[in-house]
Amino acid sequence: MRSSCVLLAALVALAAYYVYIPLPGSIADPWRLMLLDATFRGAQQVSHLIHSLGLTHHLLALNFIIVSFGKKSAWSSPRVKVTDTDFDGVEVRVFEGAAKPGEPLRRSVLYMHGGGWALASARISYYDALCTAMAEELNAVIVSIEYRLVPRVYFPEQIHDVVRATKHFLQPEVLQKYSVDPGRIAVSGDSAGGNLAAALVQQFSQDVNLRNKIKLQALIYPVLQALDFNTPSYQQNANTPILPQSVMVKYWVYYFKGNCDFVQAMMVNNHTSLDVQEAASLRALLNWTALLPASMTKDYKPVWPPTGDARIIRELPQLLDVRSAPLLAAHEVLQHLPKTYILTCEHDVLRDDGIMYAKRLENAGVEVTLDHFEDGFHGCMIFTSWPTNFSVGIRTRNSYIKWLDQNL
Image 1 (cartoon, rainbow, N blue to C red):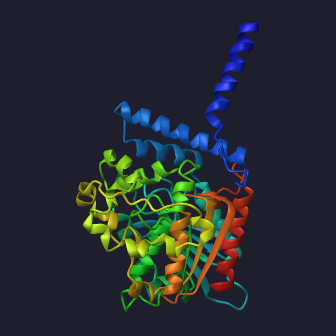
Image 2 (image 1 turned 45 degrees about the horizontal axis):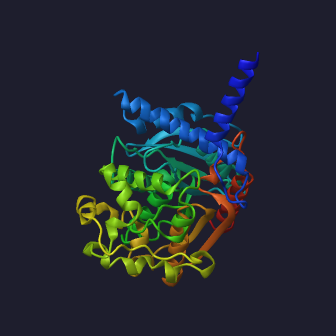
C-alpha cells in the first residue's frame, strides 16, 4: 500500500512538473493555459517520435492528431447552412447565415485559419465554431479556405491557394449564387492565416481590376515578418505558450523548406545581422523603436549582431519576400489597402508585428482599428468552448465580430 502511494505521489509530482510553467500574473486563466500548452507539447513529442521511427513526417503526424481530435463534419441548422465544396480546385467550407429581412444580399468574409502554414483545418471544431458564430451573428456568408499545408506544399503555394479561391468567389455568378453583396466583402485570418490574408489584400491592391473588391481586412495576431525575431514582444514572450520564440522560428523554416540547423542562428538575428547587405534597406521599415509606443519598448534594446550568417538569406531569400512578410511592403503599396482591424495580445511573440503594421498603415493614410488585449495570448480567440473556454477567448471573439458587424 505504501509503495503504491509513493508511486502515485511521484506520478502526480512528475505530471505537475511537466504541466507547470511560470506565467505572468496578468495572463488569462493561467492553469487552463498550462494544461493546454502541456497537451500541445505532448502531441508535438509524440509526432517527433513517430517521425524518428520513420513512419511519417512529424508535421503530418501532429496535424493528424489535431484534426482527429477536433474534426467536425459539415452540418445544417435552421440558422446556418454549412457546405463543403471547392473554388477553382481549392477546398472550402461555406457557412451561410440567414439574410436580414429586407436585405436580399448578404455581406461576406473570406477566412484563413492559423496553424503555422502546416497545421489545423477549416474543418476542425475550433474554426467551425468561429465561422458558424460569424455567419449567424453577422447574417453573412463565411468562406473558410482549406489551403494546402506544409509539408505537402511550401511557400508560396499557400498564397496561390487563397488567391485562387478568392478570385473564384469574387466572380459575379458565384456572388449571385450565394446572394452576396459585392461591395461588402472582407478578408480575414488568424496567425499564419492572418499572414495569408494580409499578403492577399496587398496583392489585390496592386491589381487595378481587383483593388476595390475587398472592403475590409481583419487580421488576428498575424505573422507579418521574419526580419527581426527580437522585437520587444519576442524578447518578453520568448517562452510564453502556446507560441514560444523557438517554435515560431521553426515554422518559418518549415514554410520555406529550409534547414532546421538555421533556427538557433535566426533566433539571435544572425540571418539579418549588420553585415547581411540584403537586409540593410529593409530595417528602416521595421524600426520598432519608432513604430512601437514607449509602454511596449520599455528597456528592450534592438538585437542586430555586427556579423552573422549571410548563408541563411542566400539559401532562404523568401525570409525577405514581401509576400511572406507583409510588414515589409513599401509605403506606396500600403496606401491602397482597405480599412483594417488588427487584434493583438500582450502575451504573444507576434504582438509587435501587428502593432507595427497598424502604425505603418496609419502613416500611409489607412483607417485602422488596433484592438489590444492585455490578458491575451497567442491563439486565444478560437478557444471559447469547454474544456478550452478561456474568458479572453470569448471577449476577443465578441470584439472581432462586433467590429465586423459595425464596419462591413
